[in-house]
Length: 405
Image 1 (cartoon, rainbow, N blue to C red):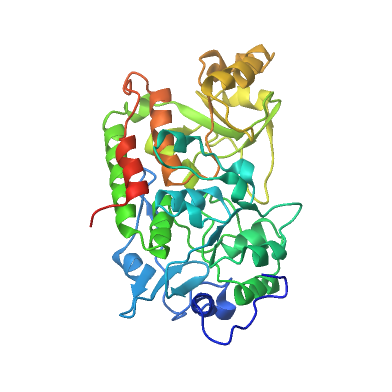
Image 2 (cartoon, rainbow, N blue to C red):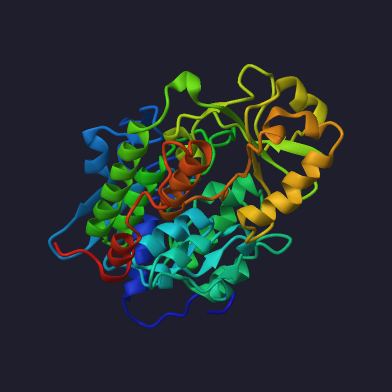
C-alpha cells in the first residue's frame, strides 16, 4: 500500500470491517473506551503475587460475540474494536505483545516491533517447534517512527497503545493516529511493562489480563487458558517452597552497561508486567525509602557506586541492551568488572556473587514462565535444585498444536 492510503475496490472488504470497528472509538481514541461515558471501567488489583485480579464485569465487558461470527474486543485506552474475522496480520509495538502472539500460535501474524534489540527470544530454543524470524519484523524506530511504514505493512490491526506514539515517544500527533486508523487499520493495546509514567492515567492491565485480551483478538481462548494453568501451577509450586519473607533478599533493579560506572534505577516495587516474576518470588525493593526514584518518561536519573554502597542491596539485577549473554559470559564481563572496581567491590551483592542479569524489559507470558524459574533457582538454590520447574513439552504442544476443546 502506498502512502496515499488504500484504494477503493468498490465494495466492503474484510479490511473495511476492521476499519469500521476501529471507527467505533472515533474521537475518543485517546480519551477512553466507547459506550456510556458514565460507566467506569473497574481497575485491576494486585494480590501480592504479581497476578492481578478482576471483577466479573471485566470479563463480560472485554469481549462480545454476535450470531454472525463477528466479535468485539474492548481494551483501554482505545475502547471497543469490532472484528468480522481473526486478523491475519498484526502490527505490535513491544516484544511483550509479540510473545503473546507466539504463545497463542499466531507468531506469523506479527509484522513489527519498535526495536529488534529489545526482543529476547532465547527462551524459544527450549520449546520444540516454537520460533520467530526477527529479520522479517519491520523495525518501527529509526530516528523517529514513520507513518509510511504503517502503510507499507498494511496490517489488519495495530496492537499498539496509541499513547506509546503520542506520549511515550512523542513521535505522532492525534491527527497522525487518526490518519493511520482511518486509512490502514484500528489500534488496540495498552502499555503494560511499567507503571511509572504520568501520562498513563487510564487503566493498567496485568500481564495475564493483557494476554487474555490478545487471546480474544485472535480467538485462542483455549490456548490462553491452558497456558494460564501452567503459569498458575508454577506460581503455586514456587511460592509453596519459598523461605519466609524476612529470609528473602532485597534487590536493586537497574539498567547498566557492560562496564558499569553509573546505574539507572528501575524500581522493583510497584507494578508492571516486566516485574511480575520478581513479585512472584517475593523479592523486596532495595530502593524502598531511599529517595531513589525509578525510570519513567520524565525521570532518567542515575546513581553511582557511592550511592549504591550507602544502600548496599542484598542483590543486584542489571538490565542492559546486549543480546544473548549467558550467565557465564555475564560473570566474565559485568561481574568481574565490578569485582575489580574500587567501590563496586565493596558492595555486599558483588562480594556474595548476588549480581544477576535483570531479564527482558518487555516480558510476555512465555518470558514470564522462564523468568520465574530462572530467578527461583538463582535466588533460592536450596529450595529449587532441579533444572526445570514446568513442562516444556506440554507448553510447546499447546503453542504448536493447540488444545482439544
